[in-house]
Length: 177
Image (tube, rainbow, N blue to C red; front, side, top):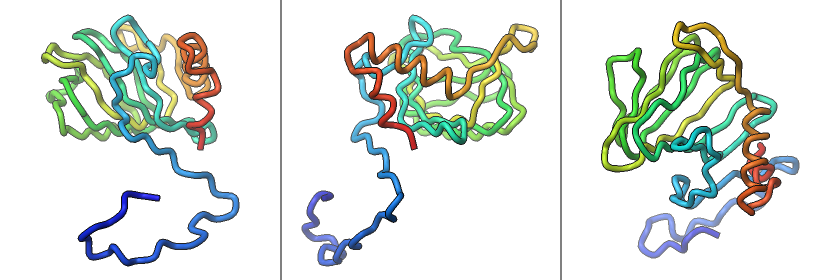
């Protein structure tokens, strides 16, 4: 049950009974997605981690909060599918693009885009919410393919990390939709 209405015009509107179809899964809800608890961030490097919010194995997609606790190179990759990003805090950008994302910035990345993601010094961690239609194709400094990272790699990384920190490997399963 959501918070009870007080003065809102809709306060006496009755909720829909049986609002979920019989085989529908419930939504994924995070009260505070960019949590500061380090345990929820799956480490990619010493300073960069990802907090998964939602995962679709079937679509090879996920949504996460990407966090860099200090300036540095996050990674270099290419997207065969689209990606959406919304900046929560800090500053980040791509060496190949003319902009710098700051809190409130939105980015739509078109399929076929390769870039070098970097986090800037800004006095606060870089946090951005991404919706990634995978896979990511890892690139070297010349733009040549070095490997790939898809939803299955992401899930394995999450399970390993959550088991190690005591949250439990099966926590990531609660995010599957």
